Length: 489
Image (tube, rainbow, N blue to C red; front, side, top):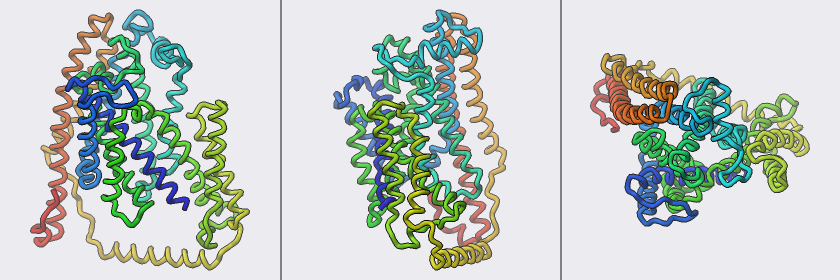
């Protein structure tokens, strides 16, 4: 029961993220195709509806039937997206500085902090109501990803990791993708509002990206939104299959995808994305605390791990340790005692304490020797099976591509990223007035656009060469029969 509820909530969360990212991608092309801005909660343009539907259908079909190709494409997008996000924020800092200080030049770190406080993370909305400051942005950046980390959703992937330190990649991705990128986006949004003379509350991601990165910004929004939507659609399909195991993953993905496609045409979903994913984090974080307590704490406190399965009962302790923190969080939110983005740590800690206490009362303190013996026997058989597989498997083949052209291509795309980032720094530090800033920014737009084309050409060519080399190496190792077998594209 607990796992089905957990998978069901995951499917809903991933569907919401997918719908929001499809809408975000559509906002970029909306500007190019000159559709009206979507400022209402519902769509007000037939053209935008068609655009969102097309994006959504393609995303669903790729997630259901072509995810491997997307995963490869997303892998080469990662370094470029991080550089572009950072560069976009850096390029618009002089404009934000002029808005706050009356000059595009900063004399030191203190003025940078002043710019952030006066024009970006002000703690006030444009109409003067209370908003969130820098601490709130940091809190949201962490809270919005807690369902993946503290809620242990990323363990669905990392359980297959060959080395324990791979887990640090999750933290690194969160820092770059949510912490650094969100702060950078704050500067981009504030500067764009000043340039366009519009309220930041009605700006769309495509408009912000255009002011920060030029036409390359459109690519950032489309690629970033599309790859995120596809990955989360795939996750939603997996989670949905956990609730309905009688259906295939592809079928569940198509069903969930149909809902996502319809939801993507409603702009309120992406505009409310921040709070939605934060609430999702609070809802799923207690499961991470329960699993932590089950696996790490119970044995160390003299109790039995997996006691509910041994006893043959529903794990009511887990349901209560999940439900009580959620009820407490709801009360705190309604009373306005704590900001929503600070609730996930106490919710996690409360779930740990509650599960340890309730599990002990409901049977975890009992020994269950027969169940433990059966698990130990099963573990021994698994080890024997793995050892046998290791003996039967052929020796590992070195598939690394050391050819000169492949190495040159790798160096080329690395240099392109360095040049884009370096020119962003030139815009930041060599713009003594607005006229110079605008000239430097126009040059940066050209470099970013040309660099984006060169980056993808070099990175994709390198990827294709590495894949072909790996296939050939495996074919040579396995012999003529394998060499003649058809290869997947």
